[in-house]
Length: 471
Image (cartoon, helix red, strand yellow):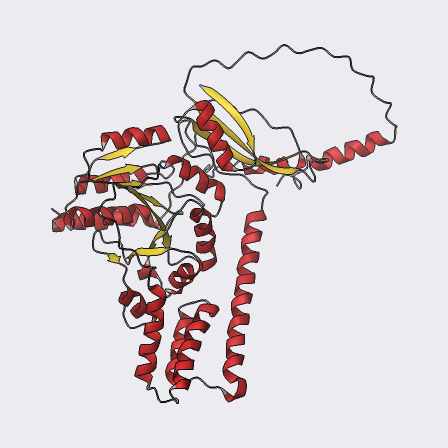
């Protein structure tokens, strides 16, 4: 096995080097942020250390013989500097610094769907080869705290053939603190915009008609962003004022439905297209990707009459493969398990007889862009492929936006929203569609396979927004 270490500025640079030097079957063993240069670890440039390996037997090139050079004698050190240097070194090493589907089949599908609601722990195994250690610096010290305490599951270590990489280690507390700060700023921004809207309504004796006021309160309860809500309400209010305030409540509601419906034009997908050969399903942990794949497969098998095959790369979660294998058995479809880009190509060749291939990917913390890049290296987008991002409606809008931002760099434009049955708020759908050029294709509203899968359409989304339809 050949193991090689790369120090790069961005993850895509590492992918190119790994593929060109180690081949398509190479796997990433670990990734870690580090700082290079600077003084005592300060003011260094941020880099990413990537450890990759391949099973090839090629021997590494021989190391050049060291050339002996004459060193100058070191300058004498003042006696008083020794205790000070020792004190600083001790501080650097301290813990403070290192921080045909029958009813029986349908019942079986519904029963196993409960498995994906909880995220089981991950079994970690040690790697066969120890990567080259990076030079010590104060910024690298927190990596020591990344090892799990005794009795706790190790979410970082992975089997030797596992790809993508191990869990990324960053300075303790930094991501959580940044996330809390971003959410707080977003809440403050939303509150300011709502207060601005209320002040605008009261300017010059302006008062919204009761129908518009009720709609505004409904949008607030649905967590629609203040700027989007303001634009809709303002347009309808202007039309009401221009009509001499003669529009009835029913007419005002109809006007608003037209505005919301116009917003959805071009933002609703048609689902899996006729000529699509492979569908990649990606998303963070716990959103219901595997159950959604089973629903999509059942829909394509029984409604469209396609022959479907499964590929799964979710080797991180205990029983993830077995869960999809159970669905595959019930639906009578073939299943291939992959761990590297080379495995994906071979799996597709073995599933050439299928009309449609659905690929399940590992749920990771896709708030971290490195994991998104690793996932993309496993996929092979083409003219006959589609990629869907699966997001849960129980998530915060800000988290959805950050995940979507990372995926949008790779051409993602389709989204599936899950767990509509677990929330009364659909505002995040509109907020995300307003922020990114996405198309919502499906919405899931339960755990029953294949029933709880809805094709997104304009009337459905507007009805749910206004609370006129319960799903």
